[in-house]
Length: 342
Image: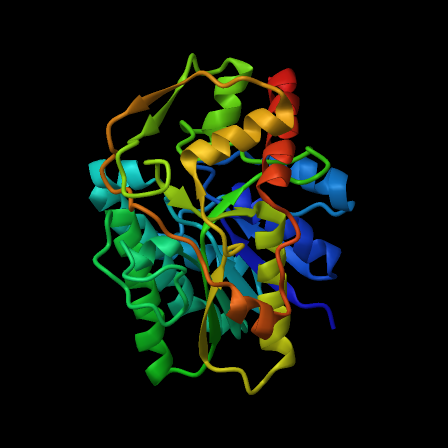
C-alpha cells in the first residue's frame, strides 16, 4: 500500500527536491509550508518534473491549534519529514527568540500530535552545525558535540535532544536524525532550485547571484582561519543526493522493524571544500569570473567541518553521485533560468 508522507517545509529548497525524489519512488506526498521563505510556485515545477500535483497546507506549525487543524484536514499520515525551520546562522544571532520559537515549538507540536494520525516514522532535518568547532575531522556520528556557535545550531542540538528524551518514554514513532552538511545545487532539469524569498545567505546562491549581476560583488568572510587557504571549509552535498537520502531513510524504517528507535546519520560527501575552492570550481565550470572581496570573519561561523559518511553508506545504501563541479553546474543553470523568468 502506498505510504503517505507529510513533508514540512515542502515548498522550501531541500523540501521541494525531496518531494520530487519521494514521488519518483512511489510515495504519496502532502506538503506543509508557511511560505515565510518559500513560494508555492515550486509546486508547478514539481508537477512539471514528476507529473504529480502536490497539495500544500499553508500553516505556522509553531501554532499548535493551526498544526492540529492541518493534520485534521490531511487525515492519516504514515510518516513525516520535518524540514520546516529557520536556518540562517547570521539571522539567528540577530533574532534568537524568533528561531527558538519557530524551530523548537513546531517540532514539539508535530511530535506530540502526529502519532494520533498514524505517523510511525519521523525524519528530522538536523545539521552539521550541532558539532560546533569539532575536535576531530572528519566528524563521525560519535564525534562529541561542542558548544553551538549560533542560536540556529543550538535549536538543532535541542531538537535532537527532544527526540532522544521523547523516545525513552514513547515508542509510537521511530526517528532518523539526518545531520546535513552543506546542501547546494539544483535539480538537473533546472526547473527547481534554491529560490529563497528572503536574502540568500548560503554560499552557492550568493556566488550565482553575484555572477549573474543580482549582487555587485560577494564577500569571503575571513581569510585568516587556520585552514589551507585561510577561508572556511565545508562539505558541500548536492541537493538531489541529499533528497534521496530522505527517501532511503523512510524505506529503511519501513523495511526494518528492528531498526533502532533513534538513528543518527551524517550526510555529506566526506570531503572539505574551502570557500575559495568553491569559487574556483564555479569559475572553472561556468567560465564566469566572480567579483569578490575578502571581509572579516562572520559571527557564528565555524572554522571547518566535513563528514565521515560511512554510516549513511552502510545503513541506508546511500552514496553521493555528484561533486562540487556538478553542484556549480546545476546551480548556475538554475540561476540563469530563474533570472530569465523573473
